[in-house]
Image 1 (cartoon, rainbow, N blue to C red):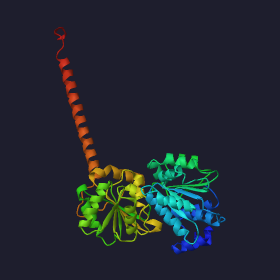
Image 2 (cartoon, rainbow, N blue to C red):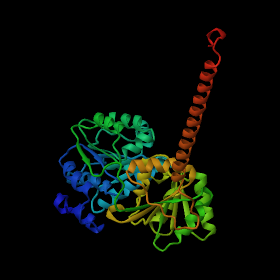
Image 3 (cartoon, rainbow, N blue to C red):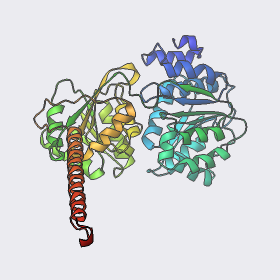
Image 4 (cartoon, rainbow, N blue to C red):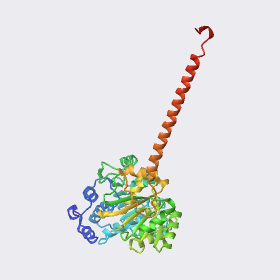
Length: 427
């Protein structure tokens, strides 16, 4: 379906066309008409499917079609996001789509001084993109009032749940006027999110573009079995391959990220890290440099990676396997966005075998093994199976031995009783 068929106004159609988009993605084709008709939405779609545009375009369409606000602008739309990076990414999208209009958008988030955000809000704003904590701070300071909000979006609700933001979300929701339109989007729809949606949405339209446990078909996934000590060496080799245009490398800890960046730099691989110990300014500068191609490799922890949206990301490396299968899905979804192709390469040490099994069970497939490298080790999962079989055989042998021994002892006792009859019974 084309954007013209979605009946968006001409200003938005020009902005979308300038961005190089003609055809709407499935989530956009499904969601936009219902949002334009004022329906609440419960949407599930993988990252990289155009989810932000699915709610940004119809909201902007509503705002642009309304009479111009007299005096200082009051906020009409509120979008909640779990992280600073995602809030900034959403703000960029709103700004891009509304460049030909007078719509003003602001992102408010923690980690930076409040002063600039307060000044921008006091000047008037149509759309607020916010992380829950900072928004509540500004509400309590009486800087922001939500009594004029008409459009309310919860983006990546499952991540907000994981990060413990749901109590804040409920507090914020209680401050909204009635009625208002609510749009809830989540990569996955666990029971907890379904229950939350029942308290927030009114007769919602449920849109499920992809199963929440199915990886994007456009991602070429593989696993490399390697000793933990050799992971950095393997990564350096793989990054030298010509098809690796840029790479997002996921690692478990902040310290590990710093060490890996230093190790890569010694091999003349320009890399930078993004994690919670970096200031917001540092993180944003690093992310912008990566988007512009000034940095080839970005090493990130999971929390810091939320909101990283790169149109042309060729490779994702799972340097450390994630603790949960859902996180694996979020990671690999950073590549192959908007229908493009991408690659996901996962490193698995012997200690991480249980994590690999969990991921494979979740996605319903066994990841292809690539052993064509200088540091291969035997598939640890096979060792576990062999070890399990060996244990079973040993257990069976021991069991049979005990049974045989027990049987021999029983016969001895029987013979002993036979030859130990009382004297008076002997013939």
